[in-house]
Length: 155
Image (tube, rainbow, N blue to C red; front, top):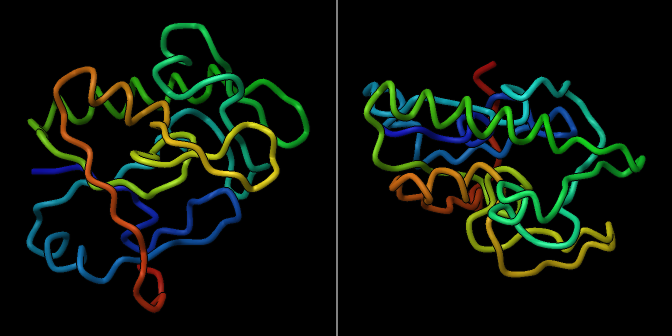
């Protein structure tokens, strides 16, 4: 069993209330090999919600208390991101997940690239909060960009 960003399975849970369906993952989901999660929703954030970025670091820095997550209105949502990350880790451990397929660029799920915290659409190398926590706990995180045509969502 693996966990997967729910948005990659067509669940409309990203900050805009949209999805990033990755059709290649659907076969594994249908077979029951994937467990969908949305760390930001698990952390108590709404759909839709203001976009958020990590300021002054990356996800590991947030976990270590050296950086924070703020939304575009300037509201500190660090606690929501931490709550969602720890809940995702709890789920992963409960189902025995050793891998996660996550959406790229997200302040939660990004595994190679995240936005730089200035809301200027600039990307930097780094991990999102949930990705950093999962990696720290031995769970492999694989980036799954949605390069395919978006299909109808499942939810």
